Amino acid sequence: MYVCACCSRSLAPSLCLSGQRALVGVVVLAFLLFADAQLVVMATPAVDRVRSVIRSLASKTNDLLQDFDGTILYAKLVAEDLEKDHHAPSVKELEEATLDIITISNKLRNHSKALETLSMTYAPSIEVTDFKKLLKNYVKELDEESPFDSEKHPFIKQFREAVWKVHHAGEPMPGQEQEEIVVMAGSQALPNTSCPLSGKPVEQLEDPVRSQRCRHIYDRDAVLNYVRSHAMRNRRHKNSNPCKCAAAGCPGILVEEQLVCDSSLKIEIREYVLRQQSSNIDTVADCTYLEEDDDTPLKSHAPR
Ligand SMILES: [Zn+2]
Figure 1 (cartoon, rainbow, N blue to C red):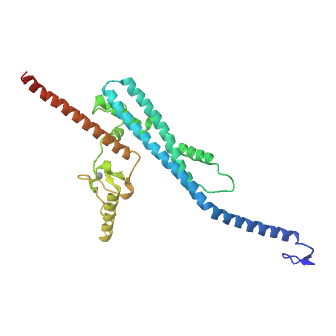
Figure 2 (cartoon, rainbow, N blue to C red):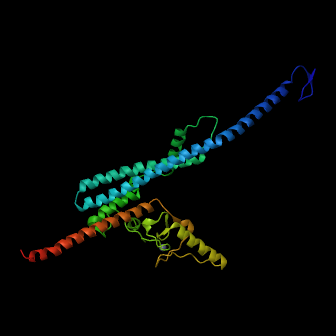
C-alpha cells in the first residue's frame, strides 16, 4: 500500500493523477533550470565571439565607407580641374558617378549601423538565429526612419557648388538657398587650421572635434580638459560663467555635449590637406616658370 505524496490518499502502486502531473512539472522545471544554467555557462564565450565577429564586420564596413568618402572628395577635385579646362561632359559623368557612390554609400552606412545594433542585441536562443533576416529587418527599419534622397545629400551639393565656383566665384548658384550658402561655405575652408588649445595642426589631430555652435575645430582631449576645468572653477567659485571658445576673436561658447566629430569633419580636413598640397605644387610650378622667365633675358644677353 502506498500513500499519495500530494493528497495523502492511499493508492497503489503510484501517485494519483494530480500528483503525477506535479511530479512531471517539477522534473521538467528542474531539467529546464539545469539546461538553462548549462546554456549560460557554455554560451557566454560563444556569444561574445559572435558579437565580436559582428563588430569586426561593422568596423570593416566603416573603413570602406571612409574610402567612399575619399573617392567622392577626389571626384570633386578632379571635376574642378575638368571644369577649368571646359570639359563639361566629363564633369557631368563625374557628377553622375558621385550620385551613384552617395547612394551606395548610404546603403552601406545603414548596413554598418544594422551590424552594430545586431552586435549589441544578439542573444542565443533554442532556435538557430537567422542573421540574414535580422540584418535585413534592421536595415529596413533604418531605411524607413530616414528616407534617402541623393540629390539632397551635402556631398552632391558641395560637388555642384565647387564646379559652379570655378567660373562664377562669389556668385550664388541658381536655385541655392541663402542658408545653403552658409553651410556650403564651410566645405572648402576650415574655420581654423590648428587647435586653439594644443596648437596642433588639424591634419595631425587623431581625434578632432568641432563645436556645433561656432564650428571651431579642437583636439578632443585638450578641449574636454579645458571645458571640464572651467566647470570645476565655476563650481568652486559658485559661478555660472559660460565657457568661451578659445579661438581668437570667437564669441562662441563651448558646451561639452556639442563638441562632436560629425560625419563630414574628417573629410573636410582631408580636403583642406589636399588643397594645401595642390596649392603648394602650383606655387612651385609658378616659381619654376618665373625663374625660367627671369633667366631668359640673361640668356639673351649672354655672349654667343
Ligand atoms: Zn569658436
